[in-house]
Image 1 (cartoon, rainbow, N blue to C red):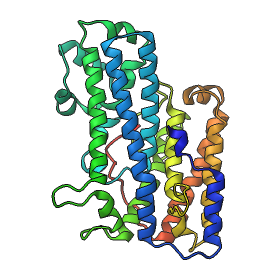
Image 2: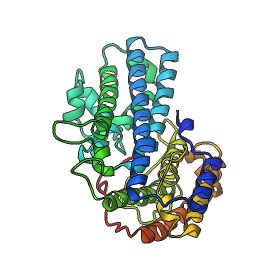
Image 3: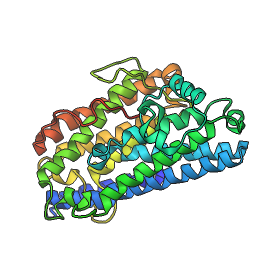
Image 4: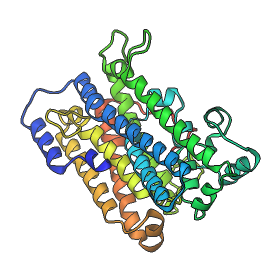
Length: 363
């Protein structure tokens, strides 16, 4: 569950004190190894487990449609979407190489194209979802569209409809694709080391640690931009410098706030570490260069998460009924983004450039 991934304030303060008390400065390799072993791999494993649980509930629902089975599938979808959102803070490497977002979680989906496809196809198999359908007809977004339809139970109960075959194929493809991403991170293939060893310098052919740290930091820059401009800014009617023309909303599952919170928790864990004994994060590279900048970064994370916790209801409803609450999140996010874009990037000598996800879209 996502709450098990939360980093407590006490743990963050302990880490700050450890740095301030003159312990040996962590190397880039130390930080990368700690993040990979204690944040990234556990995060992917949790998300893979939740997506597989969702897949099972979709198959149970379609085998015997009922109100209770639909409720369980909807809850499993919410858990899967949130736990998956936590991993956005390290959306590089195999995820990008495989173009996995197109199979797992593309945004926006196109309901009209989904309905047109369902009207034309008597059945949908996994191969169709993976290789025939468009990105806007796949992934968690398409599953959300089918599950949270007001007439979902009646439509999924219709044995003459291809809806259930499509829904279960979507679940299998999304789950298997994330499983494949995790395998590439964690398991050697032929002569190729697992990506965790390539990233951290633990194999004979590895990325330079400075380049790996830059990859981690750049991902935080791009994710901060996406949360602020493509999500919060859109729902407030503030476009910012967003390059994605697609509007962002709660979706029928009304889960957007939890997803944003999970993304921020992932970013925070990348920065401060997993909160375990001896755990390291980007903070341990920043603090020796500027303890003030590190303290500000930690404060910005606290401020954004506190502002999120103060929002009442769903993101769409809050933007309509309590816009000042969403604006407070946006403003706190702007401070966090500024600190990453200027202080962290400058201190660590990271060149930002463009994101590998430019041209792709993730909810």
